[in-house]
Every structure is written in structure tokens, then in C-alpha cells.
Image 1: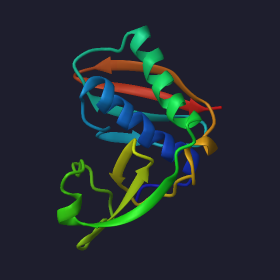
Image 2: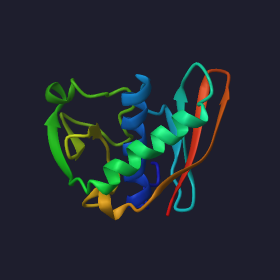
Image 3: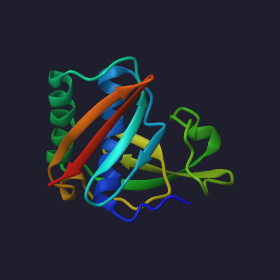
Image 4: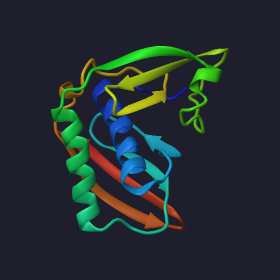
Length: 144
């Protein structure tokens, strides 16, 4: 099972995923590696990000952090959760009921990891770098 030991960084991953969906219409990350110091998310994408797009991603994520949105869990039946992106159900998400993490009205995603109580607890979000190769955009980020 994946280690989600840092609630701040893990919640930031949710925010970045939703920002990518909103700004570029791509899916959530198909692969991620979450660590306390620096993390990365991989997306199916067609090109590298521009400097302006990178700045906009940071601005959007930091805006949601600054809004101090509540982060809570809810349990949905698989039928109720069908409207959500279920492409990457977490390991251990068995049974008829799915734990969904709700971040204000910004994001809703099935997840088994720990999260902060409100986005303001995350701190500053910074994209360290990004790279593109063979249809995969990798975004590396850290928190202040």
C-alpha cells in the first residue's frame, strides 16, 4: 500500500490534480510519489508546460490554500461515486462504500490517505520543475 504519511503534501496532491483537470482538461495523475520534502505527479499530456502555465498552476493551487477550504471525508456508494473520477481507485478501496475526500466545492476524490482539516494548513505550494517525455508530463513540487 502507498505511504501517505504527510497529510499536507498529500492534500496538496489533490489540489494539483484538480488544477490540472481545470486548466488543461487532462485526467488526474496516473502516477505519483508523495514525500515530505518534494513530491511528483505524472500526467498523460501532449507537451511540456510553458513558464506561464506553471505560474498559473501555482497561482490556482495557492489560491485554494489561501481560501482555507474545509477538507472532510464522506462515504459514497459506488453508484453515488460514479460521477467522480474513479480511474485510479486507491489500493484498499474494496466493498460497496468508497471514502471520498471533499475539499470545499473545489475537489472530490476517492482516497484512503490522511489529509489536513483545512487547506490553509498546507502552507505555500511551489512547482520545483516539470519535464515532458513520451506523452508524460511530470510535475515536481514542494511546500513552504
